[in-house]
Image (cartoon, rainbow, N blue to C red; front, side, top):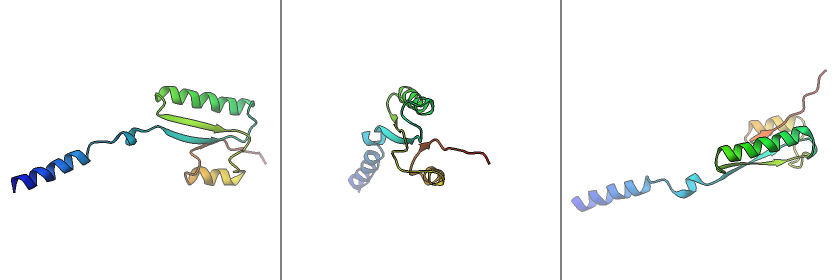
Amino acid sequence: MKRAIFLILMTFFVSSIPLPQAFAKTTWKANSLWPQKNIHSAGLKDFSEKVKKATNGELEIAVHAEGTLGYKGHELMAAVRDGIIPVSDILISGG
């Protein structure tokens, strides 16, 4: 009986140890509708480099400029809201 309790406790203990995959690098996609060399895309790229440095590389943000992810207009809000794209700029027009 003691052996069974010991095995159950050890199984619980071993299964509660976090695995290295839990701390694996995460990559987010960032959408930008602007051209690669535009100030908005350049700012997003700079931001992504600062995030990578601040998180010691645990979080990387891959910037996709010129709308290469294929989302436009109202689709961007829905894509961010639904978690399809974690980061995006969104064009706002007056009127």
